[in-house]
Every structure is written in C-alpha cells, then in structure tokens.
Length: 235
Image 1 (cartoon, helix red, strand yellow):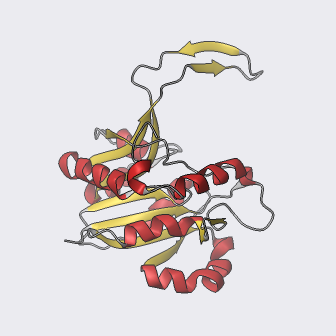
Image 2 (image 1 turned 90 degrees about the horizontal axis):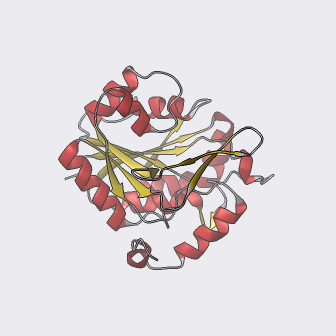
C-alpha cells in the first residue's frame, strides 16, 4: 500500500556551510549528492507513493541541468520554495496527491536516516496521527545572554532535540498550515499550534543534519557504517 508523501526541504541558503560552489544539499557525500541519500531511501520504501523536493528558485537551473536524470530515476518532483522553510513546505503541500494518508517532511540535509528509524516514526504516526524523530538531550544545557555569559542552567528533564522526518496525517498537517501563526521553525511546531499532540520517537544521533563542513565529514563517516549499526543510539 503506497499512501505516504514525503516532502524534502532543500530550499535553504546554506550560509553556514560556506562553500562558494555548492549548497550543502548538492555537495557530495560518499559519492552522491547529499539530497540523494535520503531520496533513495524514501524511493525504496514500500509505502512511499510521492516524493516532492522543495528547492530555491535560484537553484532551479542547476537542478534541472545536473540532477534531472537522478530525479527521474527516483521519482522526485520539484517545487519551488520560498524565503522561509514554512513557505517551501506550504508550496509542496499543494502538490500532494489527494489519496495520500500520511505526509512526511524531511531535511534534505539529513542523509544518514535509516529504514529502521523511518519505519518507527511511520508506525507512531499511523497510531497517533502525528510523530517526529527526536533525540533526548543528555548533556547539561546552558542559556546565555547576548554576551555569551551563562544566565541559566536549564533542566534537561523532558527536553528533546527535534529531528526529521516528521510525519502527520495529511488532514492534520494541511489544516495546521491553514491556521499557521508566526514563523515556526519546523512542521511539528505548526501542528502543535493547532492543538494536535505530537509524539516523539527516539532517533539515533547519527541522524545528523549537515550545517557545516565538519558536519559533512561526520555524516560521511556515518554513511560508511551499515544502517542497522547506525540505528543503535549508543553507536
């Protein structure tokens, strides 16, 4: 049964990646563009019916010239994003097919997602209607002022760092976006604003989001390890 649509968020500016030639989602990691690692995992999943990648308008020509063959092979549709992440997701939602049951949103800059983690968050979304991968915060958390001086030690009990994918019943996510307020930083926040509870599913810390060149090196080292090993939270 193919009833899941995946939106790959790939329209960011990659300011902190600091590469004069490629944004982080288009740079190579273990021989493939970063975005392709996740797209391939989703394309091979038996329940994924549709993959939509939101890109910046300024990247349209590059994507068409350089990746059209890969996109076609993986069945990835392209939609143009906006200035903010939520603009891009809203544009992609308009392309989601009417027969889709669950919609997942995934950072294209997270190439180390594994099938085991994906299956776990899908199962939770099937059961509850709204679920995300996340990792409990285990270190001591400090809040600093604008001079980088510690103003507070924040209790870490109950604190989780959000990951992706984040999966929701299609009607829940579409309704939440129609009522969206402010400038949410992820899709779970949009759904939380609508009053729908969202469940956290523990994901491995190897599900890293590439932000800097150092993150890319770490991700490449993870990609050399079998998926089952990467799903171990203590790896």
